[in-house]
Length: 470
Image 1 (cartoon, rainbow, N blue to C red):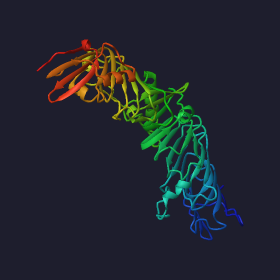
Image 2 (image 1 turned 135 degrees about the vertical axis):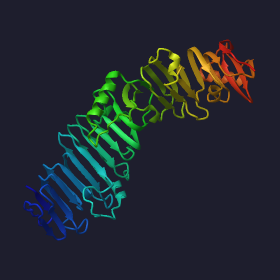
Image 3 (image 1 turned 60 degrees about the horizontal axis):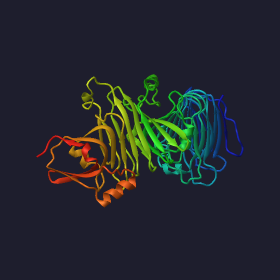
């Protein structure tokens, strides 16, 4: 049975509709379009005294409620389209679209939404949905800046789509709890004003997911221990270390099985990162560690002196891109490439790029623990490797400070050199080495002249070799 109570004065019950029937009351339209669809629309003024509140309980398959201020909807419907509402208490079932409207911050703008234990898809949107008849063509979507909500998606594999304007002020509440199950958050805007928990997968599109240690602690994918993110991520908490590892075979299989199994669900992603598996990123903040699965070249960390580590074994063709921030960072490269019988073949197919960041005056360190045969790096001031490093003119041109590039390890230079001078360290070079903790009595200044340019290495000259001179 469909029951409708409207207004704060003279409430009335509307009898059960039959297909094609309609009821009009003071500019309000109630219509059973067919055997499955119930449309309730206020065609009078929005916020009209005595007609701005409505309570609906319906068993229709599709329910449309339009142009009321305060809305309560419950029942056994499958899909709900709620347009032009300022606040409400909503039961969310299979599919729910809410298009909010507000006349400002006065009075409540709160939506309290409760999901059920099935797979729910809930969307807060700025675009009208459901009825395509030009109604509300003058809708001002910016009024959604006043909207607040508390959403509990409960059990089941749920999707929450966030597509309204940013909050007008920091006191507003926008909170979603995914509950148990595999829950997806889709961002059609930045998330700096959104609080969420029990979410396993986030898709950002061209927007940015802002996370801190609270977000990391409250969102953990149980199958592989980390929040999966497809898109841009900004970590706002102070991070002490970051370790990047390749995904285990079990994690890759779990992700592939999940996305394959749900590929026909239009509201669920059908690929982890469009065919490229994310990396396992472990962030240490204080005494606690948190895990993310993401594409590292879309990760931004606003912290000083972060130690990054990429570790694991690469047993497939895989690109790796990472640009560090503008602060003093350390990257530990610990990747072993085992896919090719001849390791020299790997460089043709596997490419890893590291960028220490171009901020003048910062000090970025690259500590290499595995053969860097597929590694290209730039904007580092210090490089360390226990084996032999292969340097080219491009290596020198893209790394080092105004005083030079510090190297702890053996270097074989493969390009032609016009001139090579070995000098004692200048006082400025020695002072810099002492300041950054890398001074050694055996270090010298090596000045290489190539064409019309000169480059400086600060290292033990006995560890430098070259094969071509002009």
